[in-house]
Length: 96
Image 1: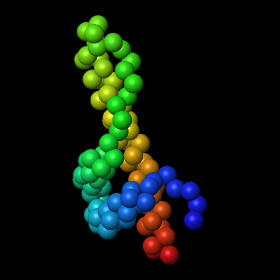
Image 2 (image 1 turned 180 degrees about the horizontal axis):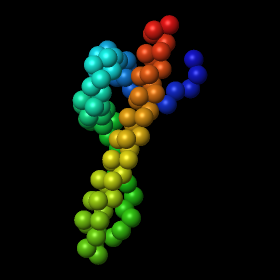
Image 3 (image 1 turned 60 degrees about the horizontal axis):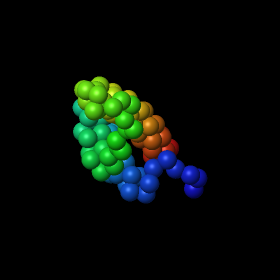
Image 4 (image 1 turned 90 degrees about the vertical axis):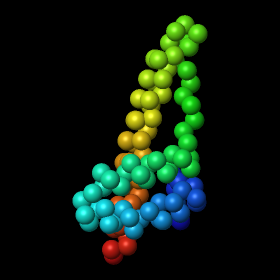
């Protein structure tokens, strides 16, 4: 087996959610599937805080929060793409 982007625990997590993914895929309700999955994912594997891009002592606390929020959104969208690819590959393999 080749290298994988996920840890063994992450792979088990993905496999455990595969039946739910297939149900939502068939029902065309993936928009309801992703928020719940991502919430669980990031609870188990939280993101590290980003390096500060501004000095909060200079009154930039709101800007730092905005940077963190924007970063979290971008990572969540990226994770949807990564997990979609993983789940789609698993679906393709299971249907052959």
